[in-house]
Image (cartoon, rainbow, N blue to C red):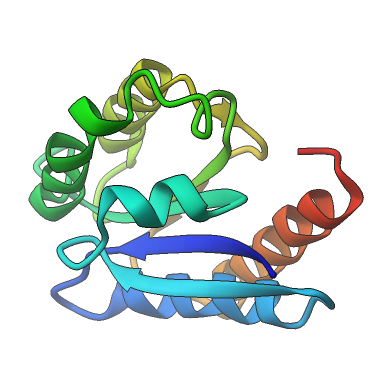
Length: 153
């Protein structure tokens, strides 16, 4: 079965709420499932097997969460030349106390190193998690899942 990997890190549960909304959007799509993993528990095989990946990170000091960076550090060497990750569709969700652009820029730069292909514009939720942000994350999950099913991504 096709799947979308949703990896996240959270300390305040804000990012987890956003990631859960993404997963619900994926799971509400037929013939595809959301694989929901903390970044610290995800491994290279999760990235290799998924049909798309959505990276959900808080912004800490203008940077991504250390657990997200650790996931990239632990998997890059194994995956850098793997044809199964070449142009793998991805999207990013940031929970930001500031503007989120620092975390976003660093994640995008790393995703270019993996040779992933951005499938959707990133979502940056500034401050408290709002109903509007959750709706946007749900729609992001649905869009990615429908795109995978349709062969667009």
